[in-house]
Length: 403
Image 1 (cartoon, rainbow, N blue to C red):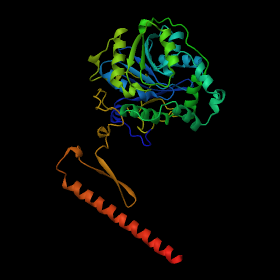
Image 2 (cartoon, one colour; image 1 turned 30 degrees about the vertical axis):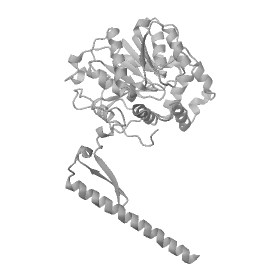
Image 3 (cartoon, rainbow, N blue to C red; image 1 turned 180 degrees about the vertical axis):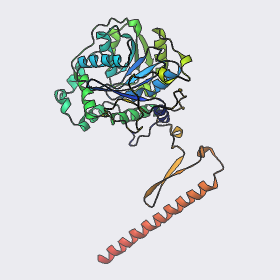
Image 4 (spheres, one colour; image 1 turned 90 degrees about the horizontal axis):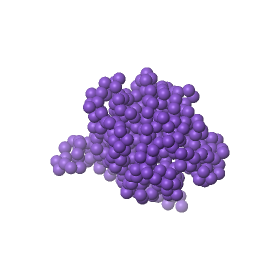
């Protein structure tokens, strides 16, 4: 994994366009994105243990531009499955959403199935990605599960991150891993402990009233943190469900293979009768955008803490048009980022950022100012090298005299 993470350009664009909502409901703090025409039944995305609402930003931007409403939520601090079902139902009531389509990955897929089992009238369809039916195998693998709520944050993060396959990846998959790892760093100890409690809470999904024809099972064929045995159990439970296979994608294909995932999601929504409203996409008035009925307020873009208990939303765009997302496939596409055409050098022990003209690498005629500046950099480094040699020589001379 990379030691330094740089936010992808399309994620920066997403944050500038889509407001982040934070609302307290009872004792639970909900953090979510809600974007797209309110007239369309929403697709609600539930992340896994290591995910946040932000991991589905590629789905939010792509599907909303096609006329779908997408809601991506963080799993709140709930400590057992019964508490999750009750809290999620209150959340849906608070944002005035009654009938939903659920898309869940890993732990999120398990929670989506539980909610569909216990609240069948509200769930119209399911999309399940790399998920499971029961948690017994996970609770057996964590002998310290009874004291997970007392476990220090660094141990919880280490356990979650060890579940993410490390090593050489193709660039898109490596970028998806980097992004998820950066999101894990934003989670508090209580957030991680509650999610691991849900994973180790001994429970299983019972029979669903939902027909298999309204379920899509999406899987990656390369590798996944979910054991193949558990994925096979899921397929056996829903034999008539539509299967969508991705040749590659790793644990987070919604980030590494967003075009394929978005296509399967769109096909699923069409198949279950959700009609997109592209006519409502452009020039959407503020009142017609998906969102909570609570009062919205702008917040600092750098405030991503899950411990913020204020309600409302952050990063509300001044213009509510859905602007096209710049082409970017992740953190590897650095030439799309705001500070892509810049160079950083050290002058007098200070960081100096010097902006170079866009498309510098493709130019044959270099502006005189840039050449002049780089000459100064070269001279500075040469002088620094000579002074370093002088200091080393001086110390060596003094040492020899002492000896």
